Length: 308
Picture 1 (tube, rainbow, N blue to C red):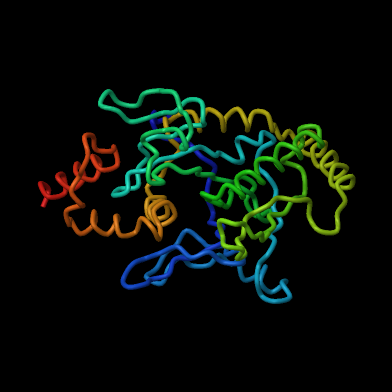
Picture 2: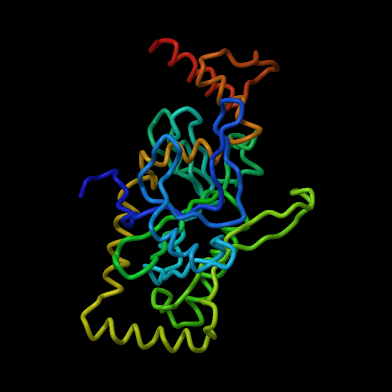
């Protein structure tokens, strides 16, 4: 196995609750009130929808996907959902620091080091919204590919909190048969003071419509027994997944770079991104000490000008 390369579940497509729009020549993320399932193919007009997207829309009364039937690949919630505080380089999208509120893995002059993680609210590196929660959820849709998954990426506290809780609860009540439960991703809306009372949407995980939790657990027990009779080794699969995730300091792939930049550094930070991309000098630094963010800006700008 190649060291330094995170071995993650095979990806068949993406699940999103938003889209990217172009305003004044800038690509900005825009939230939506429905799911969109895309393939891994992208054109000038954006990501190409996966065939499952059309199938699910046909079954929806208003043509909007508000729920998606899924199964989990693993029984361990932390293998299905990986959520950490993350800070990315705004120019190339690569991770600079990833932590869990206790410890972090950070790029320094000495390479990747393990350091204390005080969480974004108390970390000097996280000023100006530079560090955010970043979650990746892998789910199975349909039965065509037993190991293939669709990935939902989010920086929303509401989605991460809800998904983490549901995964842990369902694993507990099912007797560690999370991967056998008939589940569904569900889109929910809520209003908060921060959203100025307008609706915001987040992703939740529930038992599929029309099935009680008791029936879902009964079905999971039967499916688990059938898998064991066929020689399906769920524990070996989870062990292999842990080794794969642990093979690199960060879970990262090149195709995530555009999504990271668009998701992490959106409306309020977009002007800053534009300055970096166009090699325009950032505002002068005032005060006794400059922040790490400003130092990174100057360093990135200097490197870009030298390369040019």
